[in-house]
Image: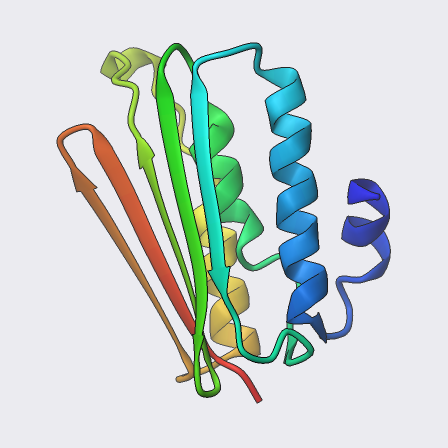
Length: 143
């Protein structure tokens, strides 16, 4: 299901409900991969889950949260809707690695590029790192 969604549903907008189901499936898949020590809180407050959105915009942020899971780890995800705005907020603990072991990924760069093409002037992505927490908030104005 994860692969099918990534391959076939990326060209057109999908109901917000489908995007949230994809996130739930991805979380379940990651929990199978990780033996223990990860706590995931996922909550939604969506008034109209049939509103259309371009797919896989939240996924890079979720994928980053699971990237370096080790030991006791926390991921908090909240998706809410305020009028025609959808707000995706994710907070996760950060595992510190020596500078030599840190790898720069392309996920956030690609996400920013996609957002500028798909939602020009209608999105906001804020990223904050404080001590042992990483927080990203993505707000998108849906059509």
